[in-house]
Length: 381
Ligand code: SF4
Image 1: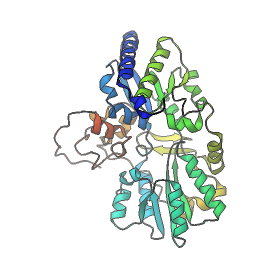
Image 2 (image 1 turned 180 degrees about the vertical axis):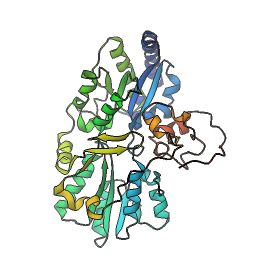
Image 3 (image 1 turned 120 degrees about the horizontal axis):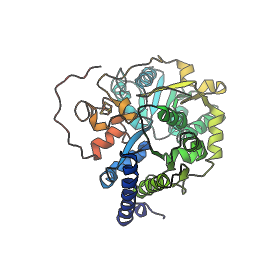
Image 4 (image 1 turned 90 degrees about the horizontal axis):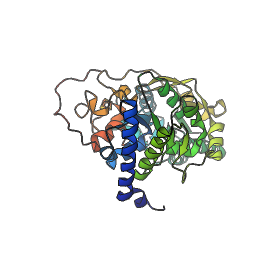
């Protein structure tokens, strides 16, 4: 297959749905409950809703939307740290667009920009480095965010800055790692997961072997999946086939992109610049050991946290916000008390409503959920 259309072929989709439905019915009957499959990645959630896959698939198969949207799991305290950095008059604060609207306790970066902070949207860390070159009298901070997918480009940009001797560039590092997070989910007593659709883009960097523990220690099958509708359907079929045959393996549906051993050059750049933090706080999931990275001491001059200091406070989510329960799969997005009323993509209360990859935003835009009229209750904070 060479073109996107080939991954959206309706006839092939119908055949796969039929096969999945047969397997799901069989497996759900044996378990006495619907199957629960977690799609780890926000990109998968987006495809499932955008292309109406959820509506095509049987009720015997339930999706649990995982924590793989980095914007969605950013805790309020880190957003407040971004706003504090952006309000420093020496700093040009640069960020990807979807992070600008994530609410913190003191508003979002977009609100800080409206109030005069120099916040600029960029498409890559190299854009931020270019700004540093063009503005030698200002400090340019890049809001480094994302899983292993985006870590290499950030690391390579820091190495480039050092090669060029650029000193007015630094990172506010919020990169996170997927493996400890999946482990924390598997250890959660609230969840009964039967299998995983593994994150395709992260796996392009780390490869498939880091997932072996899911099959070996937790006895759950996982299929690393691509992002087109047929990728998702084929991966689900592979996953259910493993379950029917009593296998628990790591399979790779996204072979056209994901090499078995990952990308050695990308991993080397990441290892040179970053090291694991002891713990990192996730919105809704709390603190997870070794789930984030910071810059190594050798790169302290490029670390905005060391260079400028940040408040670093832990801030609780608003009481009415149920992002944590959605992230853990305890409730579906539309079951949150404020879904579609006090929390909408235009005025998000929680981070899952901000990014197009957020589960709540996907339900709101494509879920065909009947929205109740806006409630008059005041949102507690
Ligand atoms: S509807 Fe809003 S507050 Fe509720 S879980 Fe979703 S993002 Fe969080």
